[in-house]
Amino acid sequence: MLSSDVIIIGGGIAGLATAYELLRLGATVTLLERNCCGKEASWAGAGILSPLLPWDYSDPVTQLTQLSNGLFPQFIETLRKETGIDPEYQASGMLVLTGPSARQGAEPREKIEDGLDRVAEAWCAHHMFPFKRVRSREIAPVLARDEAALWLPEVCQVRNPRLLRSLIKAVKRSGGAIVENAEVSSWKIERGQVQSISTSRGEEYTAASYIATAGAWSRQLLGEHALKLDIRPVQGQILLFKAQPGLLQVIVLQEQDNFYLIPRRDGHILAGSTLEETGFENRTTAQARTALLSRAHALVPALSEEILAGQWGGLRPASPDNIPIIDRHPEIPNLYLNSGHYRYGVTMAPASARLISNMILDKPQPLDTTPYRWPA
Ligand SMILES: Cc1cc2nc3c(=O)[nH]c(=O)nc-3n(C[C@H](O)[C@H](O)[C@H](O)COP(=O)(O)OP(=O)(O)OC[C@H]3O[C@@H](n4cnc5c(N)ncnc54)[C@H](O)[C@@H]3O)c2cc1C
Image (cartoon, rainbow, N blue to C red; front, side, top):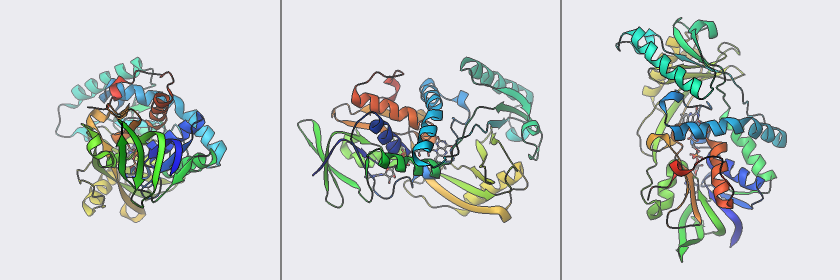
């Protein structure tokens, strides 16, 4: 039987960031992944490091994302130095389009614009988040329409596949054991504690603590031990364009439908994303392709079928109000969960990893963890 201080189950961003943090704090870690690490939601995500309209979310979401925002620069810098892989973390800023075309058929424009601006402005002032009212083309001249917009210059982004590759390398370099093709299929629970877990290949692993980070599959993984955990898969699809580098330089978000464009340094532009209840089905569809293509083209006419370079989907671990569960099991004290980050699992990764690691190692917390409790 293989043994370590902590076993982490699931090798997406939640599991890898947690492994990295625990190793930094001196624990021995084994991470078990059903397939290959970093190939599910974490790979598929868009990499915006902020809630889309941050003022629409509750305090627990804001607190966690702001803690992460503070941790990200150091997190990325250390990863880059240790692994030589650049996750392309950058403050590209986010332009939120609030103009008339974003809200056709809705209430009179001035009224809503003013309302949204006031809410956004108050939120930004309260959280010391830089913000400016602009015309969209001042910031992104390539846009088809010049309309009222909000400019959030400090919103950052990363390239998910690069971030994941660097995390995998960093975990291994720090002495973490990553075991792929190891699906955890059963729990041995005796005397109120997890004694060991087994994989579908029949191997048995034991540790002092166990953390479930299985994303959309967390309920399945935990089975009867999930209690009232409410995490379900919600599919998101994205289109990829290959444009000229520099065509678009900022993230553009349409306020009405949360449709966004994200430019990468090499000219790739992501357009997304859908929100679909497909169960565990993760197929891309022609319907999503048509809808995303027409929205992208309406915003930036150069984004056409000719430069379409890809389409993919991912299953987000959806939780009520987008509040993840970062907690110890209410009845099994050596079982933990770090999951349910829904639309913002990359944004919340460093902060969630910090909270769950502190909890296991009995260290003081940087914020009140009550909102992230496991529902019993
Ligand atoms: C289209 C799309 C766009 C998104 N955009 C953003 C964004 O811009 N910003 C942002 O912050 N977030 C975004 N997200 C959300 C973010 O990607 C997710 O919240 C995050 O990736 C969840 O990470 P995770 O590690 O919990 O899950 P996953 O990455 O899905 O990882 C879970 C892992 O657990 C493994 N697993 C499952 N069951 C078992 C088992 N029994 N045994 C072993 N391993 C198991 C799986 O194989 C998988 O590798 C987006 C998501 C999608 C789909």
